Length: 130
Image: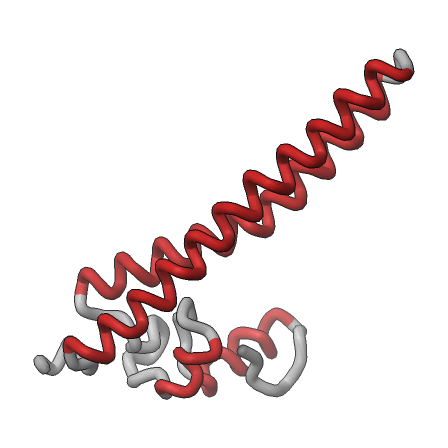
């Protein structure tokens, strides 16, 4: 363990497995949601000539996958921090993120105190969230 790497190999491996499992799950959701929405859109276009409906359904598919895509991006960033040796450290203050927080949210970038400050600055509430 170095001063820049607060986690031992075993813990880092555990969190890497969690992140990779989440990555796989979210990637599958993106593909399923897009395929489902596109199937619906294609069926609707076959049944009617309402191209506006087709556009609305495609946009919905994109919005659904945007949420999943953001989760995939968060996981990718966490894996990059792990590779750099900064995983588990708050990107705002540099303090260690509590392991219970990382268990609940392996992609956490902030410790609980900084998360609360970030959310308060955005007007999303006073308490920390996972």
